[in-house]
Amino acid sequence: MSDDVRELLWFLQARLREDEKTAEALKSSKNDAVAELRARVLADAEAKRRLMDWVTEPSELPEGRDLSGWGARAWDVVVGTATAMRLNQRRPVIDHLVAAYEGHPDFRPEWKLIELDEEYEPRTRTQGRTV
Picture 1 (cartoon, rainbow, N blue to C red):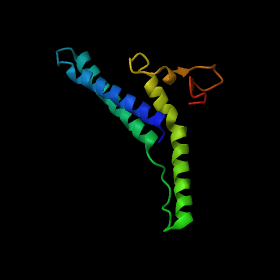
Picture 2: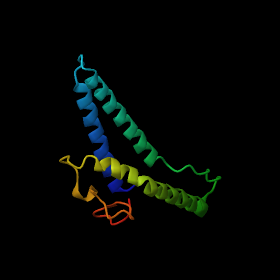
Picture 3: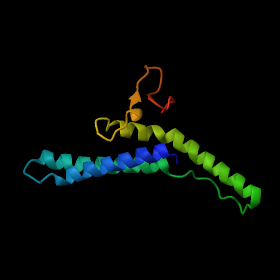
Picture 4: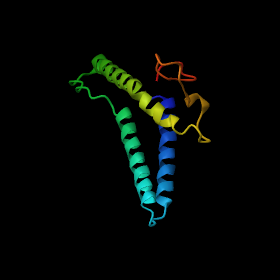
């Protein structure tokens, strides 16, 4: 996993912990809306964690069949490439989750998504690739 993805995941995990802490600090009251909001924020954080797990789960490939030497190294390359391709395909999920925290002081300008036009996918500022 690349360092930029690790940074995004770290940032998102920290924001989810902050959201949960804030939600848990809400005092129970006679106001049902507060209790519903608290429950919704906690459920939202859990759903985002599941999405993060889905994005970063390793590729499911068959075992390397007792390979040794060059065969084992080649198999490692195949598995690594498949995992990287899968992460690259799923990365937009993380990019969009992170974009929701654009106003946070730790949010980096290069993480901001840019809408090009209706025909194209959003791109990040520094990556110059579809996300």
